[in-house]
Amino acid sequence: MARNEVRPVIKLRSTAGTGYTYVTRKNRRNDPDRLTLRKYDPIARQHVLFREDR
Image 1 (cartoon, rainbow, N blue to C red):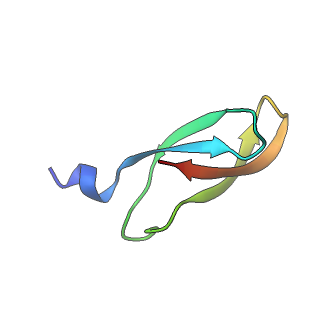
Image 2 (cartoon, rainbow, N blue to C red; image 1 turned 135 degrees about the horizontal axis):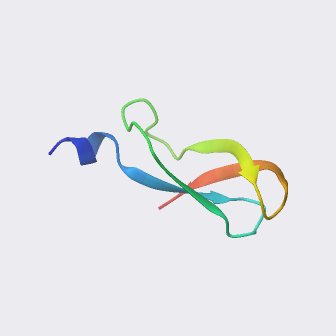
Image 3 (tube, one colour; image 1 turned 120 degrees about the horizontal axis):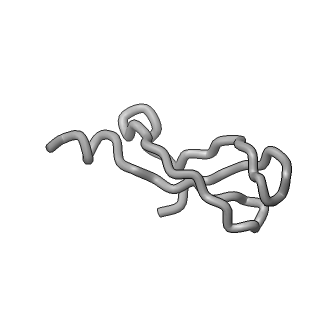
């Protein structure tokens, strides 16, 4: 189906070096580049940047 092509499942890995990840979906048409979000890292106990891991 086209669902997997347009909205793939991606991992967001913490840039704090803790190894913590979030799993989410993204729309390739709106975000063709790597996704970067600022989210909470419970190991570092603060909000840090999470980058898309391929």
